[in-house]
Length: 551
Image (cartoon, rainbow, N blue to C red; front, side, top):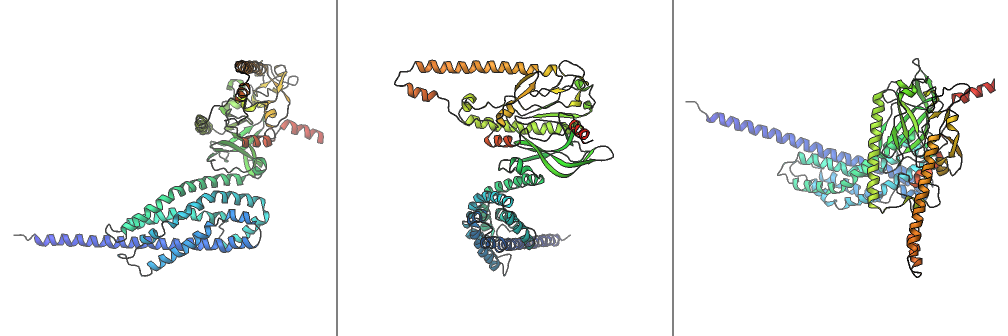
């Protein structure tokens, strides 16, 4: 008969060997995770020490910063955090001096310092102000900026902002390391329960930190875009805002699908770079550009700020006039993927390298605009209804139509209203309300420039077509009738009250000047006052005239 008992013993031995191998592997992985914890803690402590020795203490003594500036950039919580981690690192080193996988405890140390980790929340609340103030000082205080640049080689090129983000990054790193240690700790290990409890404590604090880290990443992307422009600060100030999120950038390669060009009213085409955010669209152009063998512009030089198109209530993305109107033009617009982007204070006509690039950007802009409108609707639902007429009082009314997109001169050879052919005796004109390319006879009417009146407080008259003039007159009559109806309603209601209550009734119905709930916030008005209607215009026709005078 065959002896089966020997085979069973062999299987048990094999299983024991596998268990022993798994146990040794788990111990090695646990030891590696603990070593990584100790190493990163030592690195973190060294970076904090460099922050104090190279930046905080010298800046306090060399008087490059005022006391208030110094306290804003370097919150007092940094000293407390530094002292905490000096003691924490000492406890780690002491506990792991004679490391034993079966008895060495890491979780108890974290539990001991768990309450002290909550002081990080105070630093998180001050971090945003510290970074914003640091950016401001680096732009305004040239001596401070030069001194910081000189100290960078001492810290391997790390900036002050790189050091300030370290405490925010540390606790999420603890969470990852603790998970790795727990993963390779046996179920019945003496440190298992303490590690799990320590990880739960860290997770409660890191929920807030993760939001801060996301804000930091968004801010860094916006800041990098801002630094690419050489004149954005002079035009609109800082681009960085806590709620601003970068979405997309157009291609700068001439063969790219979303390579973009702007068309001005004279038919000139300037390569531009579009930057889409969740609340606005920005474009810039390079100061110099040349052309390659394919007669396509290659960008180089310095990126200059073009303009900003805010997602206001008049913002819209439209197709240009039908391609049949461009049939007689010498610009070959039927082959271009054109798009009109309009806003209250500035509008542009752009074309993309391909139809897919146009569709991509139209979809991106539409999605962000819809999200913006949804946020504004939610805000208005939470607020009381406000009558726009009561908000502005005697102030100039905001534009009721977007800024015009001018049809380029080379778009067509005939008037877009009467179809008269342009020539030497019949010059091209534009309606400054709708932007259509028209002849002299179709643009004889004039109206007040509502954009310059509102944004620049200047009253000027501009050419408009017959249709825009008629629409404006109808709107004026309708608005006058509405105002008269409101005044009669208020008058009749006040006459019904007693004399004693007359004063209270008058105060109750007196319009209050409150800010209008719209996309145009005060900061938007400040931006448009500085930059609206001052963007450079590139005119070949004017350049030819200048060249003739020089000759």
